[in-house]
Amino acid sequence: MNAYLFLAGSNTKSFEIQDYFLAGSDSSCHWQIATADPRHAKIEAHNGQYFLKDLRSTAGTFLNEQSVREAPLKEGDWIQILDEELQFSLKPTREKPRFQLQSRNPEWNEKLQRLSSVASTNFPVLLLGPSGCGKEILSQSIHQESRRKEGPFVSVNCSALSENLVESELFGHLKGSFTGALNDRKGAFETARGGTLFLDEVGDLPLSLQAKLLRALENDEIRPVGGDQNIRTDVRVIAATHQNLIEKIQNREFRSDLYYRLNVVTIEAPTLFDRIEDFEDLLYGFAKKMKVRFAHQAVVRLKKHSWPGNIRELRNTVARASALFPRQLIDEEKVELILDRLSVGPQNMPTTVLPHQPLPLLKEMERQMIIRRLSTNYGNQRKTATELGLPKSTLHDRLKAYNIDPRDYEKK
Image (cartoon, rainbow, N blue to C red):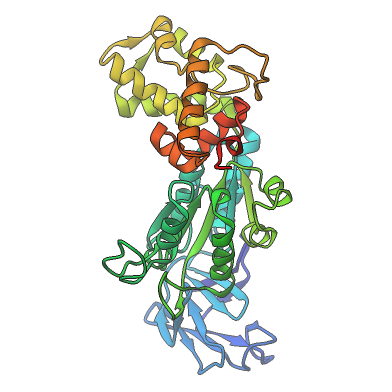
C-alpha cells in the first residue's frame, strides 16, 4: 500500500511514498529543501504502517506542530520541516475541503469555503462585521477545522472588563499583585495553550494593553501581572470587532502595528439583511431549539424587518416568542408584539439623530436613561453599559444613533 504527501494548500498529488521517502537538501532526496540538512528526515513503512523519523537534524522535524524524533503517521497528519509543509494521506487524491458553515448567499458562501485552507494554518484571523452577525460562531468553526481542534477554545470579550481585569484575563496574575489577587491565576493565553484564543471586540482594548498584546503576538510570550518572568505561549489568535479599525487608527485609538499584526487574514461577515437568503434556515434552526412555530405570513413579515441586531436579534426574537407565547402558533399579529421596537437600525431610525429631530416616546425614554447613567458615571461607558444591561458594543451603537457624546459627561 502506497502513501502520498500533498503540499500545503494543494489538492493534487505532490509525492508518492513507496518503501521509504527522504527529505533534505541532498540531490538524492525525494523532497528537496535547500535550507535543510542534507538528510533531514525520513518516512518509511513497516508492516503497512508509515513512520516519520528525524535524522538528527539541526532544525528538527515537526508532526502536527510537535517536534518528534520518531512517530507513526496517520491520515491527515501535517509534516513540517523549516518553512515547508506537507500533509500525509493514504489516498492518491483528496477532495477539496469544505468549510462546515455554508450559506445560500453565493458571495458569502464563497468566502466561507475559502476558510477551510485558512483554518489549517496558524495565521491570525481578523473578523470584521456588525454586532450580532455571528463572528464568535465563525471563530469556533475555524477552530474546529484547524489542527488545534483537540485543544481548548477560549473566548475573551475585551469590552466587558475594566483595563486591570482585561490584563489579568489575558495574561494572568500572581498572588498579591493587586487588591483581590488572593491566588495565582492563569490568563487566557495560558488556558488556551495548544488551542485557539478568540479576542472579541478587540477594538475596545485600551492603548496600554494593545502594546502588551502586540508583544505577546510578536514574541510568543507573555508576562503575568505582578510577575518578573516571561512565559512562552502556544495559541492561534482570532480577533473580532464591529468597529472601523482604520478610523480608530486615524483617531489614535488603535495601534497600526497591532492592526497589521492581526490583519494577516481578514473576513468581513455580512449583515443578516445582506444574506437574507439564509433567513429561513436560521429562523427555523432557532425555532426548533426553542420549540416555536411560525405561520407563513409571520415569516414573510419577519423578513421585512431590518434586523439591525442581525442574527443575535433574530435569536432573541425567537426566544421572546417562546417566552410570551409558549406552544402557540406565531401569526402575523403576534410578530408585531415580539419584534424589538427599540432596535437601532437603518430602517428603524436615522444613523445620527440631529438635535431638532423629535424622537418617538420609547426611544426618547431610552435616550434620557442613557444620558442619566452617563452623567452619574462621568462618561464611563463600560460602567454605563453594565448598569443598563447592554454589551458595550450595543451602547456604542446607541450613542452614535442618539448623537450622544460621552465626553460631555466626563469630570471637568
